[in-house]
Image 1 (cartoon, helix red, strand yellow):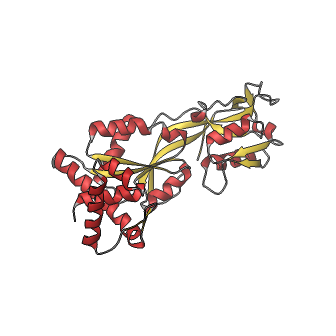
Image 2 (cartoon, rainbow, N blue to C red; image 1 turned 30 degrees about the vertical axis):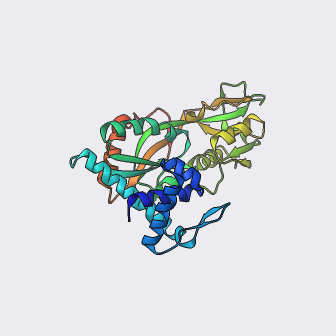
Image 3 (tube, rainbow, N blue to C red; image 1 turned 120 degrees about the vertical axis):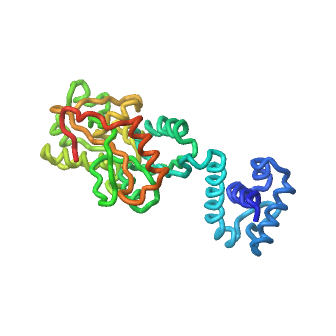
Length: 305
């Protein structure tokens, strides 16, 4: 069973079109057809249903799709190891990320890993919400993730690499928009826009906690899936929101950011990984990340944990 047959299968399974798949593989379409037939002969099954109009995976095709992709990944690592030599660190590290705080560190991390350990492949996985990262690390779905404290999973370790200040986001025509700082108690009767409560958002939890400390329960009138949507809704006058200093680059027309009254309040952002069984490649990435993003000094004010 040749690797070129497996690569042909993987590309055709993605494209479901012989012409496009052949173009990606830089071969003639008849050659691609030959490779697929030979793979089917080797396996003794039909992998694709073909008609003059459509191409789709058979049940057997669906069954072998995952194992073939894993085989191709392993082959890639073997080729990389052979090219780099036995002294290099070779492997794939799955990195889960979500939110502005982690998106900003992915490019410098990828650049530093490529420079220091070219045998390591970073596989990026978007999690939508950082609160999902510890559980994903715990189950082995990802090797490294980025999350805001607190991290309560017992088999997950965390190291802080940034502190994000909690701010108030208001419509620009809000009565409090002209103030330099906003006391949270003054928002007690306001409608709030927030992340969904069911997805493990640390910012949503912090909003509820701070509001209760100020003497009220926030009325979340609209939920939204990400900071861009939340802040756009605030700008449109749907409500107010607590947000973070890492997203102040988002500036839809009609939005203003204001400091919370009192001492600054922060959420800590951490890189998380499994307590046990960390592979050589994962440890190398963690070491590189600590070099480029060391733990900062404890900021003045309050850190929620």
